[in-house]
Image (cartoon, rainbow over all chains, first blue to last red):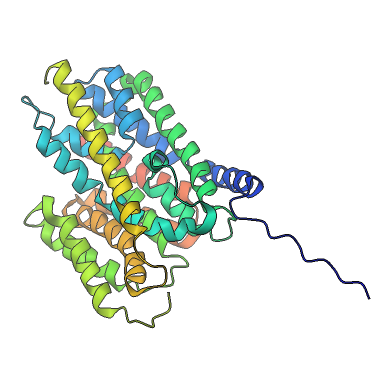
Length: 243
Length: 102
């Protein structure tokens, strides 16, 4: 009697899985790479209109790589430059990256023992969301890097294009595109909501708390929202709740 | 505009602080046991953060901005077409602003 030999177990960290997932991640990001591209164009146009040189704009784009942080930072870019306020602004606006990062070890799973910390430089809302949703990817870290490559390239390309196109975008149009960040967030939360297995009540309460706080203090709004959402999630998540 | 040296240092501060936000969460997350109650709570937190960033724009934005955001969201919810949804939102915002200010 012949027995079929068991298939050799392939580690999620195998090069084959990594390459396949990397390619899939890049393909997934290509479809929505217009977001970072347009953000890049708008950022550079805004930076030039505020007195930054093209070179400074490109370097900011390349080494900061966070549109919301850059826009918020430019708002307080005065003489003398408030370094502490800049740091606090970056930490506050970028705080959602901390929360996204908290989930990453579980998302990456066994695909990587510990990612090189430099690769986390590429963490953005978009590639975090895509990687979180890609449950069938065999190497989620590879998938993350594939998304990141496309998102980062589109953002930097958008910045460079914005340098050349800045004169074509008038002030009224630039003013009108202020809402693009919020539009992006609205689409992001709908994408996140699809297939999410937990309760959405904490999200709703976080939004309400943040909106109410913003009527008194814009700076504290995000923090208040996250704290209320986290508190509610903490109170309502039981030991045996389904993940 | 601050001096060139001050500007480069400011860019460095932004870059460093932003990078810290990107690695801090991951480093803390490695200490949380998968499947634990804490683990399940943190799964909801990114949604809370996105919601907390979005909500003030809806409340404090102009009628035009709020309309653009809601139209894009409704369009995306029903069609699933993200690029079209973005275009809808941006078109409303840009055309509306030109109409109001033009």
